[in-house]
Amino acid sequence: MPEVWYRDFDINLNPSLVAVIGNKGNGKSALTDIIGLVGNSYNDNYSFLTKAKFRNPRPYNRAANTEAQIVWSDNSKDGYFRLDNDVDPNKPEKVKYIPQNFLESLCVNEDEHDFEREIKKIIFTHTASSERLGFSNLDELITYKSEVINKELGSIKGEIEDINLRIINLERKSLESFRQSLTEKLQNKEEELKNHEALKPDAIQTPTNNPELEARNKDIHAEIENVKKATTQKEARLKHLNEAKSTLLQESSELEKIRQSFQNLKDTLDQSSGKYRTALGRYDLDLDNILKYEVSLEPIVKLKEEKNRDLDAIQLELQGQDENNKGLEETITDLYQKLISLEEKLDEPYRLYQKYLTDLDEWENRRKGIIGDTDSYGTIEHSKSELKYLDERLPLELESAIEERNQLVKKLFEKKSEIIGLYKSSYKPITEFIEKYSYLMKDYQVNISVEFTLDGFITKFFDHISQGARGTYIGLEEGQKFLIDLIPQFDINESNSLLDFLNAIRESLLFDKRPDQNNSKRELEQQLKKSYTIDDFYRFLYGIDFLKPTFKLNLGDKSLSELSPGERGALLLIFYLFLDKDDKPLLIDQPEENLDNQSVYQYLVHFIKEAKKEGK
Image (cartoon, rainbow, N blue to C red; front, side):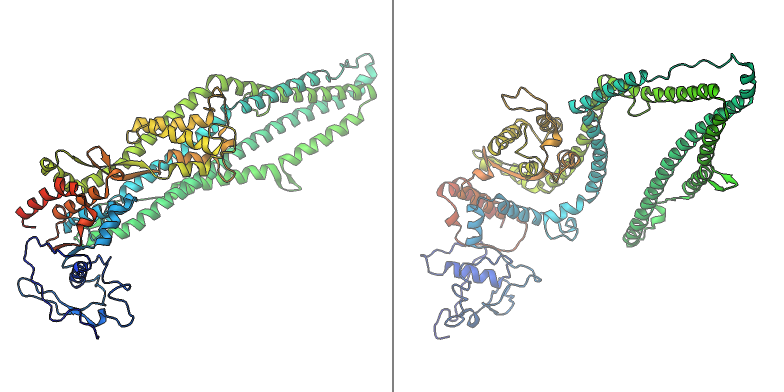
């Protein structure tokens, strides 16, 4: 290399606070970058050792022709390190390096996540190695510790999804359109009954004025009555068998679902047992002494087989085996044919009379079918019963179901809050630090907390809800504004207030909250985008996945987003000085670029003095 940058260049640094002072361009960042590289600092956000500067391959690679090494106070050294090489992530850091670019990006960037991420890194160094459980950062550790909690969350969500379906069905019945449909069906049936009453067959008297004719038709008439009686009995049997068949099919299906559920449970237990057996084996523990279970599916299988045998017997009775053993349905058909044949043998007066009786029976049966009962769908009595149910029982059932869901959501929130507890436990070092040194920052108290925030709630809400549909949220700007104004009215970190928020959202979809709409009723389904169902929306709303544990840092009455770059820089350097438990040297490149004089005076000076006392 034709240029001379460094030749036998040694710099002796004392073990305490060292400040390198020099004009811009005199090599301060070059020195710190080189120490960071040779000390294998993982933070390689360099300002000097870049391809635009010292590592530029044109006209020649200066870094490839330059070597450096660190000699420690005990005279140990690792040999020379070429400056075009990269740090080795598989080797330990020997210095903690905060490059100027890195510190500036954390202090100036409006995105709080980078700053939060760095704070978490510092906190993680405060976590004892034995408590890190092999993980490399705080979020991975929290995720692992949350596994059991997340499984319980999934179970509670399943219960909420089940009750959502009940509520959706009850809400559908409470709609004015449902009541209107039911009322119209009742009116149609009542009109049908009125028309049917007018079609009652004209009465025909029994022909009794001709003894000879009566004697000739007596036996045929008696046989007709017997056939009718037999037909009525067979039809009653047919109805009973069909009802029994329907019940058996439902029971068989339910038993199969139960069997499958227990089979899945057994498979899960078997799989988990294998995993835990290996883990427990490392501690000379036998899983069989901890977990004992037996899943016997045989009683369910046997009962299901009995149901299937009963179904086969019913099917055989209905359809028969062959021509010699006819089924019930064919037997009834034969009886009707026989009845027609017998009626044809009657003399005219008796034939007319018999036809009248047959027509009257059919008329009576049709009348009964129109009137029906409370269990016969589509009949007058059923419609009346449903309308009575809408007035008397439905409101109470809906209220009860909503209260049941509220309790499950509260349970879900409390379980989710346990994850907040894990974060708070991890942040304990920083809260203890704040308490310990509060006297140095009495004018600017630092508060650290972890609380729930709404993560993407507004976006996901309008993914489901159309702003082109008539209702509270119609209009892009108006709908957004209503929701944005609604959210701050509730404390989502308190379970009752969260429930109030969720139910306020629901109410704003069932009633139009625009000033000129007088709380007019609206149907939720008509406000959903085409690709979504009410079930989808309720799963989103009441599953509360949008609640995200969030790190909160306040300096006095200022939130993290309101801190100046200088205040951010001072806080970060204080945390590096006191919270980072690494005993390696801390190297900071030009921190004054990201600090203001007030921050230096009010915060940093006091803490540097304290750090000196503790031998940092």
